[in-house]
Image 1 (cartoon, rainbow, N blue to C red):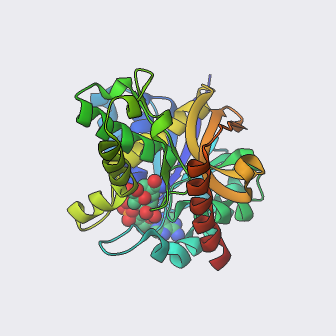
Image 2 (image 1 turned 135 degrees about the vertical axis):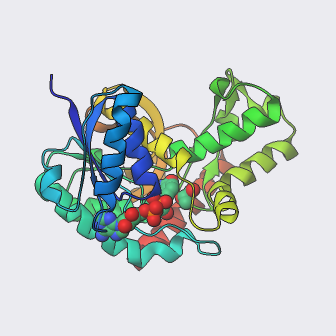
Length: 307
Ligand code: NAI
Ligand code: 2OP
């Protein structure tokens, strides 16, 4: 059976690390595309030369030409500018919208049946750009943010309680921004809500740290933003789709009435499988949670209006 094919656009930190994870899992051949001459080719060659040591047979091509990406099952879009210290995700809006639009137009020309996973920030707004530029149904345009935000929440819960990250589950809804909505009630350690295990003050501290998780890494790195956890999160979505795992993951999805929101990308739990976004899962929110979710949706709407 032929291996699946995944194109990763943007051979920067997130893109190249995502390519590495896909290759090392051996689940797809990867085409790495960048606009900078030689960058994707150089990283592609380097990744290919790691294969004998790692022991996988997946192929990697680095290129500036979308023709090489033809027939991809998934196209991951990471191209764009990353946040610098003091720069909000929203500052990136205009520049990255132009990049995402042109990348998606070129990619879907060669892979009309692909599933698009958008990573470029500001995430929810870039998903709108990709949906419009591709003309795809919502099942095939999905944004990566919730997996990352939940992973951060899980890390902090595990560190706080001295338990394995494996036994933590966390729920984060809303846009990928400062208004994201971590849901402590649905965040658990081996099924026990963290609200039973931690004081309200400690829960709030972890929630705040999660909402600022991206900025915390930017402030430390000073020259860019996080990429190991973002790449691992993107990989989890790629794997769920390629292996038709029906994983329930928080993703940016184009809502059509769910959670009382229509015509907007917002982070919600979805089922990811071979069909892409196969189902949106609606959970009952308390009045406070619904209000926070709506405030987060409003901030996404504000950005998309600027587009
Ligand atoms: P990076 O600067 O390391 O890589 C971006 C790459 O995109 C560069 O290699 C650049 O040459 C390339 N690029 C720019 N314009 C292009 C075009 N028109 N066509 C093809 N390639 C082009 O940045 P990094 O750290 O990889 O981040 C990438 C994006 O992902 C940023 O917008 C960042 O904010 C976002 N991000 C989103 C996350 C999320 O949770 N959704 C998490 C982490 C990053
Ligand atoms: C992050 O959350 C920058 O959105 C990126 O790390």
